[in-house]
Length: 228
Image (cartoon, rainbow, N blue to C red; front, side, top):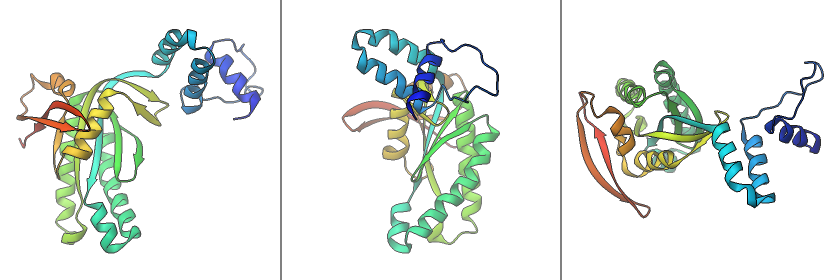
């Protein structure tokens, strides 16, 4: 971002940009990483206004939703045995199977990092339903795949307020907890809920098994969605 673009973005965030003809107005993204960086720079430059700027950040990027972090299992072993191309192929195959399930239940894949997918949903039930459909599709696919090339995932689901940065990235306590459940706690086929996510579906007729986890210095209960 050059100096002129940065100044314009700062002004736009403060609501100081006057209307201009479309031909003269440069397209700006006001909810992406560049916009967030402007806010954070303002905190550095004006620490006395940290609280007010934090409120602006929450208004601009804040969202209440369910998050699902999906971890693809067994890929390190695949890489060691067959090489990086096989690793990438299995990730690609998994994403092809997962994407319709997420989109079909009002979800969005916000980002993909290595063998993880980070998704948002309007509700925890949407996320659970999508996760169960993903597991079913993978079981069907595994019937025709070689044993050592089969696809498995575990899912961690949370619910609460997050910072959604232009549907390109998201942050928050529930994101961290769901990530730990999906990546560190979950085994192949697991669908695990944070306490906040469980509270959203407590009244639903879903078989749930409670557990307790200690990971990365955190101790908290989690809830496993059983087959039904």
